[in-house]
Image (cartoon, rainbow over all chains, first blue to last red; front, side, top):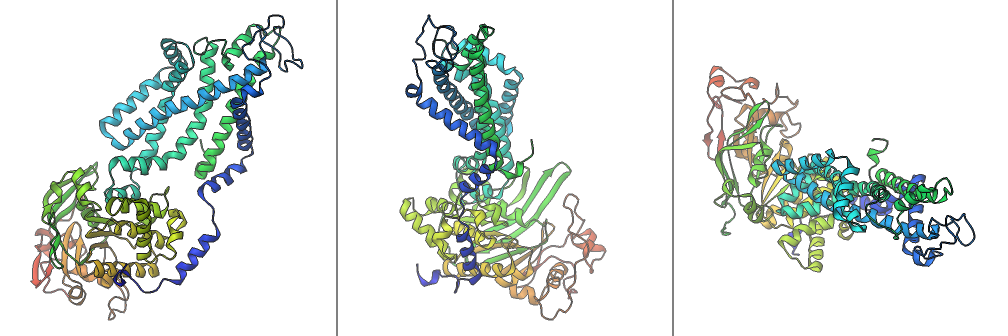
Length: 307
Length: 331
């Protein structure tokens, strides 16, 4: 730099003081969110439950006391014992082990469904919001059409036509749920579309794609993250419902939905199976919801108390 | 695009620009025959009240108008090329940032809230100077230092909301400077700043003009700022030009009643004024503008002819233009 580049003489005193003040309160964005999140005890509890669930799912082969698909016809519908802490099912398989392996399926479904539906929904929402005009119309009317179907029937039809197994369930539930992401994304895009920082990005000659990826997407990310945590339990529930109805994942692979179904058949003899598998679903769904609520409040204090 | 333009040559020429907005209430004639010439190395001030078309003029230059705007005539020539005829992609690649950059009114909303100050300046450094990561970072720190931000390393990692308004505005300038453009459009850049910060900001701009021969189109509603920084001033009223002159000439010898009103309504600019006056009435709504001279309902010199005939812009002295039927009587 030459001397000519110096535009004015002295650095100002008040600004230096300002910088000092800023240095003192070194709190990053993430720390701030965590501080607000911590205040919500339910959310903290939910987070604890989720962490436990994730550990159980990852280490299921080590933690599970038995092979989840090994049958024992001499010990069916057993009550809790030291060997089988939560009893056995109608084929003598260990309930606790099956629950643990079921957690893997449940979490996998939850996450992958959100990836699929979020991927489709956010992409289409971004396109609809930024392009506007007839593209916007086409996308949003498609969303309306999807929403007009009863979700479960639609999912059932999709899953049946896609065949059995884990991935058909994920694709079916994902295709049912992307509409919410599309709506949220489009709404958020429209709300920041006229912000000056978008205009100033245009003014320095940034490309359209760049503006979408670096300006729109990061700014709407908090809403999408919150949406995702609310959608995960939804996906788990929907998948469980499909399994309960007999489509999707088939025995002997353990899924919570399938466990509720087999347990309900002999509920009057031994209600333990249907109860614990049902509880597993309820607790997981609630935990995700608590975390989602906590995140929403922590990321956007303005919205607290609303909706 | 030729680059052999020297100081004093016209860089941006806006000629007889006419522009309308379609709204539900009707057509708003936002600009009606605007002529502005910004020369290389000159700070050209555009002044007028809210809604007189100042900002629209600048947005037209960059092609950033909303969809409901219709250009009804005129040309915007930059280095001899008509920007109005360029498509959006060409404007983006050849003009925006590259040749013309813009500072907006409110620095706190003009910065992307999710990136640090340094990251944002790096955006323009990477496009216009160097895409080498290490070098880009160093160039960003240079830019921050250049706009006199104390402790550039620290500011680099700050998010916009962690900076004060004055610092945000400097970050904005650094971001625009990093584009190395020839013309800077500043759209009321000091409105959101307090007076002491404002003075520093003007100093930076004037320094830039001198060291880089940067041309600046400075849009404001503040006569005091105009007197502080501009070389040439265009006074706009109701989408038309009321008066245009060299800054000294304008303050010494204002000829349009509106200019006089503006000067008199600022305390302290003219020492001889003991009590400041206001201009009666409000800015006309441009859906249904007043007939003849648009200023006539608020003008103390107005007569019959003012209601009927629009006054033409006359050159009353060298480089001093006035659009008023009775400029000779005005004092």
